[in-house]
Length: 270
Image 1 (cartoon, rainbow, N blue to C red):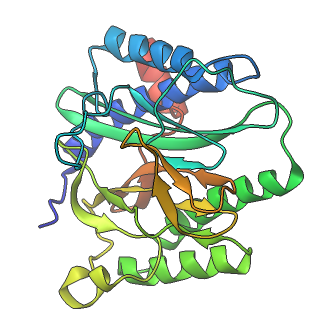
Image 2 (image 1 turned 120 degrees about the horizontal axis):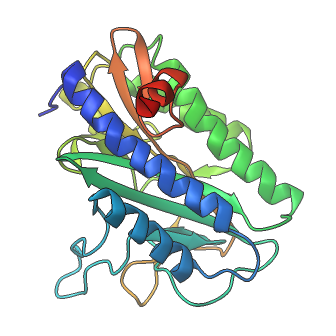
């Protein structure tokens, strides 16, 4: 069952969203050749600790029986890694791409966002993949102004990615978010049987969802590494991942995981 949030609750979620946005600002300053994903993870963990925020990914249970929980604050997925990559001490190299997904709970409410960062100069064809993945997320957010049901948005997202020559990952989807990181509804980025009939959901005030397209340069198929977390493309080609927490208000979609508005900056300064 989809739990619609009040404007007060959305306001509280915005605080968590800002904490996640700040985490990505830390990452953006640190991502460069020679830096390790473990160092970035530590910095973001310290950021959340200073705010009194709970990292959502740290110790997240593994769905594989008797396998270890996720060991880090952030998912750090490099190049062909699609999602759930574990931070490590291997230095990033010029030309890599890093998909960083993180979230936190602050004062009982959650925020979640992902970006794919270029490490130094990247190949033009890889930049086009990043642009298309960010573009399809922006398309979905824009369509929330005019579409009544998510299924209509998911169809257009899939067409956009297909027309750009890429493939949409179908074994991972977005999700509702609120007091928990994963709530109803599931939010696929493609036409899905889960959206047929009663499985579809309305784009209406109070809806808060994490929209997170994952797009591969080659095949949509993925496989899991022996760490029981990291998912990589089956053909070894690059993958990109972008995500925002989005709330539907009476005025339309509002991004909760973006930079503070001038009004928010002025309030914080008082």
